[in-house]
Structure formats: structure tokens, C-alpha cells
Image (cartoon, rainbow over all chains, first blue to last red; front, side, top):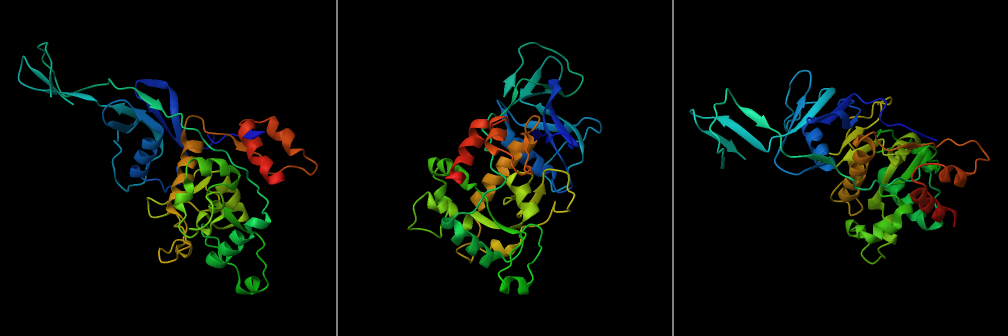
Length: 96
Length: 227
């Protein structure tokens, strides 16, 4: 008989393009920083292209490489491999 | 820099999601929660006791009078990389992590003091189950991956076992391996199973293993401890 590691989780994360199934999650007891979270995602995720953006769903807070304790919640992961910025009319430029 | 071929007016910055995200399928290595010590590992146990003399995660010290009486009840010398996975240890040449046993065979290096530390029994159960780990790349911070009922989360691994001037100091690579396994076990998907450790007397462990997940891996790791 085995028991589950997922029941006590208070952090979960999703692919922003597939919000129906969580990619994973964990128990945040207070020691995991935002930088730790990004390192953990680096161990687990295979990203085909570009950097990722990790954003808390309710607050919109974007996770960054800081020693700030990670807030509990639901995080969505975006791959910003192509970013369009506004330029004068008739042209749009994509930065990779 | 890429340029869009179709003229368009954008009202503001726009993010387009093109790349896909996949979760790694890196194998997770389950381990035995209980492991009986054999004669060849007594030097491991004694060396660990002599170096640490306390639980290096909880910080609980052993009274000097207990040490003099050779009473180490509730303290265990725990392997960081599990000895029951000696085949993996050799396949991946993890013996290179060990620097205090130059003349030893690769397989025996798994019992180097550098691949272990002293823990209280309860902490060892959590450590063997990957429910608690140490991140050597973040100041040796202790991370509890379960509800932290004992208040260990955020502690720092006691310096007594990681003094760089000590040739027998704990291996950062072993700790890094364990931390990665803990992430795989606890964070990926729904997480890996937690195996029962408290079996009533008379329980046939082999039957239990054969009826559980990771049957082959657990069977292979259980077998050597019975030989």
C-alpha cells in the first residue's frame, strides 16, 4: 500500500496552454524561494524554445530569481519564445 | 530579429506562445526505507558517528555520557546514495564523488563516510523516503517536501559534516543527487508513491513488494540485503 505525496500540496503549476492538467506541485513550508522554484522547474521541464515566464494565476505576480519566499498558489508557465512589440504603423517587429 | 511580413497595427505588447512544455521522464530511483547494516559497513557507521556525533539535520546532539557508553539509540548512520543501488553507482561512475578512498574499488566507495551522515531515526525515514533533503547549491538548506510537523524546513545542514578541511566531509555531489531525486519524487506530476514502512510482525515483505508499484526496482534492491 502506498500513499500520496500530492495531497498536502499548496503550490501547483501548469502549462499556460493546457490548464486542465497540473504539471506538478509541492508543499511550500516556507524555505523555497522564487529562485529555488525556478531551479526546480529547470530540473523537471523540457522547454523546446526560449525562456519561460512563471506567473501566479490570481495575483499576476511574476516569479523572478530572488531569495523571496515563494507564495503558495497556482502558477502558470509561459514560453515567451516570440515577443511582438509595437512599432510605428505598418510594421511589427518580433524579438526572439 | 524577425520581421512580420503582414502589416498590422498592434494595440500593445503581445505575447505569442509557440514553444511546448514537457515534463521530463527522467527515472526516479526508489529506495528501501529500512536497511540492515552488514559487517562490511560497520566502518561506515563508526566513521559517521565519530565525525558527526549529532543529527546533522535536526541538530539533536547525543549526550556525551551516551557516547561514552556507546549508546547510539535512535541515531542512525544514513547513506545519501542508497547502497542497495550499487549497480547504478558503478554504471554512472559515482565513485568519482569519493575522495577519501583512493585505493578502494568503485563499489566499496559507496560505503565511504563521504556518502553519509548521522540522523535521528525519524529523520532518516524521511530522508530515505525523499521527504526531506538538503540543497548543497543553496547554502545546504534543508527542504521538507511534506507537511513540516517537526520544524526542520529551512534549517541548515550542520557544519560538522561538511567541513572542507576534513577529508571525510560529506560529498556535495551525493547531496545534489539526493536533492534531485527528491524533486522528481515529490514535485513531478502527482508525485511518486510513499511506501509503507510500519509492517506488522509476520508480514511477508516480498509479497508486499510484489503487490506494490516499482515492483522490479524494489525487488532488486531488497534482494541484496537478504543475502
